[in-house]
Amino acid sequence: ERKVTVIDVLEEARLSHLGIVPDSRRYNTFLIDIGSGNTKGGYFDAGKNFIPVTFPLGTKSFQRLIESKLQGSSLQDYKQAAQKILDDSLGRLIVYEFTNKTDFKSRDVVYISGGIVWAVASMMYPELVYDNAVELKKEDIANFRKQVFENFTRLSKPDLSTLPDRDLAEASLKNIGRVVKTYDQKALLAGAIWLDELMQQVNTRNPNKKLIFFRNSYVGWISGYIVDKINKQYLGLAKN
Image (cartoon, rainbow, N blue to C red; front, side):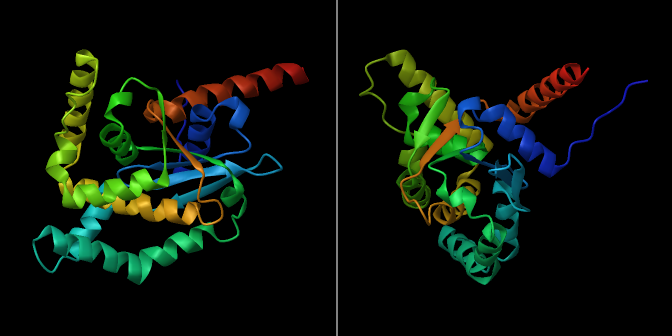
């Protein structure tokens, strides 16, 4: 008979941190993962205790919430509905979740992951399709949010003829094609708005934080689980 381990959102956040963030930065950085249904992350404090940060919204769930409040069918109506939700409640929710968690604001590096971050990295830096880690700026996220709304065709079908490597251009376009197949324009707009608002709050103390997207973050918590289990086994052997 095998014992099945059940992992909740808070434990997944801790394990993702262990699996994604390099050892050298484990105790001086912050991780936030924007999923389809929720957003989770956190950091280790001075006592090496993991301080979780969670929100019951992600890219797809925020999209559904926006659609439930829509008064019209245009993209402008969609954008206005999203902003009203932020103004009425979500903005306060973000501020409340970060209250008394001031350590994260002093961290100079933030690891961000999730489908919407993959979309930002893929579309804003298509030439870095083979890079496992992509550094983003807060301006990239704000610009992506604007481009999804104003220039979606150009964003989703960029001209990469200037890239010197034809194979790289083809790989980049295929990657962008996967993004568009996964998320339509409204889903990307919902995710971009949510991500942008979160990053604005994260950057209130240091607006020049490094934002790092880790491409293989979707297996982060699994890697973290393995690391955690090995560490516990090692400590157990050391005690004996």
